[in-house]
Structures are given as C-alpha cells and as structure tokens.
Image (cartoon, rainbow, N blue to C red; front, top):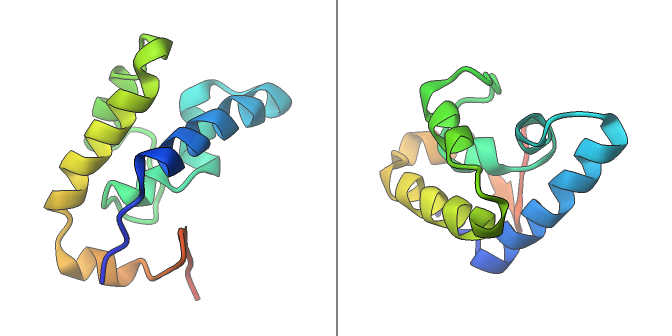
Length: 101
C-alpha cells in the first residue's frame, strides 16, 4: 500500500520548510530536500541528490511563491502515479512518515 499525501499535508510541509530555511540559513529548495518528505514522495532514491533531474524539474517550478502549494501538489500527484510498486515498498511508511531500518 502506498501512502498518498493530502493537499493539506503538502501545504503544511511548505509552511514548515521556509522556517527551517530561515533558521538554518538555507535556500528553500535545500530545506525542502533535507527536511521534508517530498524527495522520497516523488519516488526518488534515498540518496537525496539535489542534482537528480526530477528534483531539478520540481525546483524550477518553485516560483512564484503564491502558487507554491498548487505547483507542489500537482507535481507530487504526477510523480505519485508513476512510482513503481517496488520503489514504494523500499520506502516503508508509518502514517505520514517514511522510515528506514
């Protein structure tokens, strides 16, 4: 079973990331990469490679800020439907959290 995040959860994630970015003095895309579940939610491997082409496609769409939730949720849904089952099984979830042993 693959977990599908709600639009509200994505919005909460996008509210959280700018606070982390401010505290850690990071660009928003790095805070989203390092401190949110988005990278894995796009079906990407656990290497958290900021240069991965799919992640870069997401980052390019991060502007304008007023459409951030819509862009992210739409992008997420597009990737979510393309995630093979074996990738989803490699990223077990509990509630809205992924974990690794």
